[in-house]
Length: 263
Image 1 (tube, helix red, strand yellow):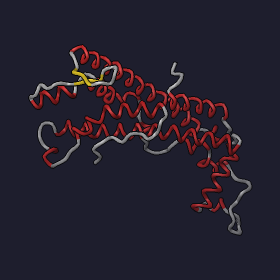
Image 2 (cartoon, rainbow, N blue to C red):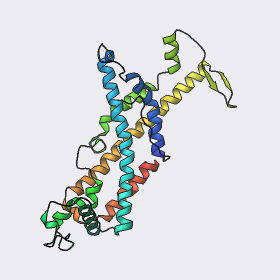
Image 3 (cartoon, helix red, strand yellow):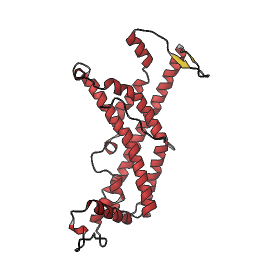
Image 4 (cartoon, rainbow, N blue to C red):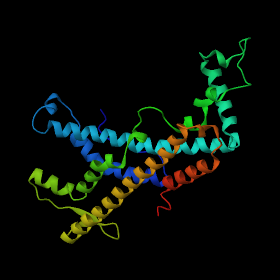
């Protein structure tokens, strides 16, 4: 079990935003991590186990979304740059690569002399080698199976965390009122006033709202893009070039990765 949520190692705006959220969720991961058998018993056990399980899913979703967007971008760019936006050229090439690497149990893939057949290839033989078969993951997948409403608990946690002062918690637990400090405009440490604490809390609440809205919006966009890709994948349109649609997906992917043009 991991004690910390892994950040995304990338400098794109989406990665930075996700890492900001990950930073805010790290305390919940640490506090809910089971360390001994006693953590599996008692009144708080179910709550802690549920909290830890949710942080695992959130981590998988953050990384999965970022990786899927990059995957889509690379596949579609390759489709246009290397295969001239031709579905058949792409599928024929990918089929040949797959048979060369893994072989095939289908006799239709070979000539009578045992060589790989490269002519008179049917659509059925190309079905799982089209660009959409690479874009869509026909399996249980946290990116494709996550709906925006599935992230309500994440959003609720973000907003709840923004109203909690870690310093106040530590002071209450220790019984030591202590002093908290902040950096002033000259980057010198000074005791934090009540007004400072209020300003910081308001700022954190505003940021939590912004990040929550971002999470929900990205989940909506991922659901929409996945639906478009799946619709083609499950239809005879996989045997068409679909250049306009794929260019549209590529533009949306770029917007999401760079957090631009959200309106």
